[in-house]
Length: 275
Image (tube, rainbow, N blue to C red; front, side, top):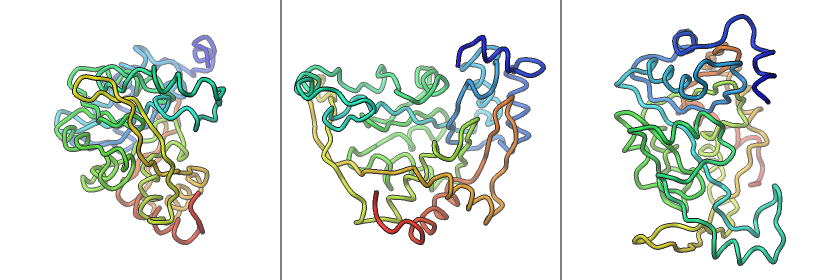
């Protein structure tokens, strides 16, 4: 969506750091929260200051004792033979494996994560996990615990940042996005399906002792096609989801551990096989 269109569809006044912080507090975000944020800047309408203003509003709402986490995935640094959106010609594959720049948590941009996450990963004091495909960035007292020791073959599983968040009484904030973006439900998948999860050999360029190296590892094939059904069932069954507008963006706030645990039960009962 272009900026002109966003301006035209913005109702009343533009959002500011102060108005966004007020909306977040009204939604239920409190000081000291550990919060995993999935966000769409364009869904909020026109924001004075753009992505930085949104991040500053979240920081102000959780305060210095709170921790902010965002997904900073870079799925383009992966095995090119597995690409489907779009695929690339087979003769390109060896060239891409040999020349793709290595993942560097300090400099590698996000892909498909939106302007807010891309801005967040570059800000002073933000730490980023060392997974070449599904890294997470965090800021605050729990940032190191959440981002450390992110194993390649457990990208979204129990030892991943999602697993760390499960034990920290964290919340998930869907800021103008729906349940299809809710990565915590991938942790539910892995816990629910266990050995039935399908795995595929993938690869990535990484830095090893300062040198670029192409590595291969197994990655779980995941599926978010039923996440909207899980989210709706969670809302209806538990009453734990708080909803409201942040600027113009319909937003949801929920406890991460309760969501993940509910997702495990739902998937066990409703998804008969791994994707």
